Image (cartoon, rainbow, N blue to C red; front, side, top):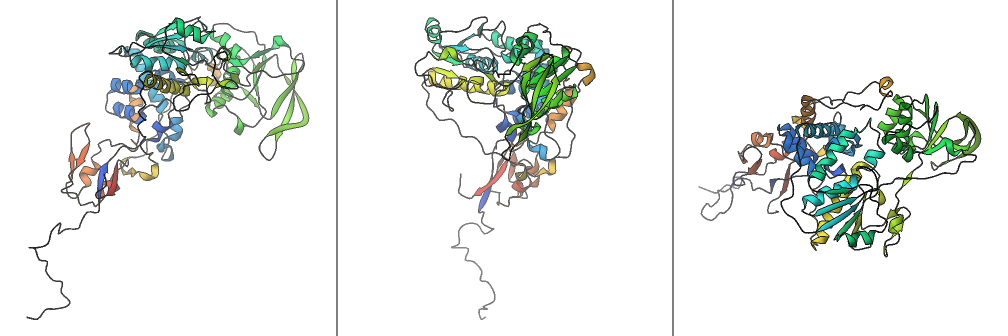
Length: 544
């Protein structure tokens, strides 16, 4: 028989090695990626994980997971501006998960059921002094105490909370909620000394035998502006105004109030004025609504309550019963400048809300401390000042001045202080890569309408300082948690298990996810292509 040229010869099975089937060039691996909500949270919460625990019906475990990073869920669920929701991948599908409302639900549930923080299992023998009992100082105290350190807070006010107590009105943050969440921290053994201002930090540190210091005073000083013919009896700064109201006082402001400024504090002052009986409450702001620093929801709530916005206006003079305001316009670069045209605006009281500063004067006597105007220069990685052992955070360092940012600074400072006390120079663990919506396969998820918190009607809520926004019911909170896409993190949907044509995916039991049997896996990528959350990646064969 002659050999044919058009027929492939048979392999010599005596000498051939390796696979006869197609050779795998890549293989799947399971991985955890960084959800955008987690990345966007200034407090560093593992949001995806505590939402997962709620979905599993483990509410206390979810609360403990949340409070491992943030001790104030009931507070944050009310006052945080939830940048996590701005980052949420689901916003590009239908609507962002209402993370703040679920966080509030957990916080309120914990208060209702009396859940407490665990006391530290060890005592480090180290003492840390914290200056300021605001969100940053309280957060640092909590985390330092969890690490076993003895913590003492010195604060100049009558009660702890800082701007949470004396700046945020009660209709946004009821004081019983604030007091209850602060009490959990003192129950851990943190000592808070109220009415104890610090004037000589180094002397206080030596006298108390403190090994490290964290300075976290808030921005409690209002900036001033010069207004010709200003009548001091008719003008008050917003910080003092809000503080007096928080203390139970009722300042006499008249029927017509003008608030000068465009930040969140200005919105709070204007809304409080309405609750004190002002028939007219007007915001005067020199730029446009797009340039306004106040958060959109704060501005919209103010407008719902009858607060008027006077854009592109600046106060030039105060008369006996009115103001003179100059009409502004924007140049090509978006900067406001005067037009030479003026208007009259009736006003019995003017509330100045043109910015706030931290009172850092008591630190200027410390050799080596460096300042940039009202903020202290710190190492951005450690929050330590130029003086070894003295750290700073919150409103007194360059940052956005919000409760959540302050709480995040407190956590970061606590961990950095702990490392410094223990002479730990190990580098931080690298972050997982961020996962985006276009990396996910959304076959598993349908459209589900976001749950909305009930609110009092605007016409009734301005009559008192009662809380405006209601919480979610248990069913609503669980439903909202289930809207989470679990971006970049396996939630055991069994998609890979069911899709694998080689039965190469092995289930490890509830909570333990899966593993691949690479003896069976052909690298076909079916598991990767169907994974709804991008928790599987294909890597070249031989790569670890």
